[in-house]
Image (cartoon, rainbow, N blue to C red):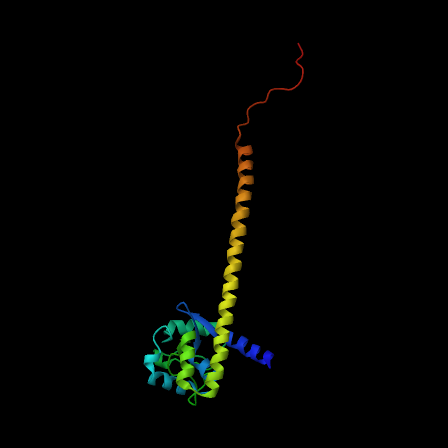
Length: 189
């Protein structure tokens, strides 16, 4: 059972994207996890807009959506003349009419928690626990990478200084003027 939960949380981590400096999840991915349709999820959000400030949820711009689409495999996608013509066909977001009709909303970690309270089904509550754990794991992973990067920088600066001394000594040896040396040995008269 623990292995199944771990796999679920790992799958959720792969559904977290970085947009505008936030770690976010798409409305369609959340709808699937919460056991509802994307349309129903967005209806509930619209009914409770006061619970979703801009740092909890926002709608992607067309450019952000294009960039996101390039991050994950999507078949049969097409972009129309304006934002409402945008169509995204994926496993998670297929409507009866054949795809998305508008740009998706994305939810930050806090927004996903708020969604669970708005939806308030047993599935939503269970899913929110796994989603929060996935965000925490991702945060820990990013922190480990930051620490590793910092240690590498420290090592580089340490060794750069040591090599700098060697390079300085080599430069000094090279830059000494080549004065004729005094001959060694006996002079014959």
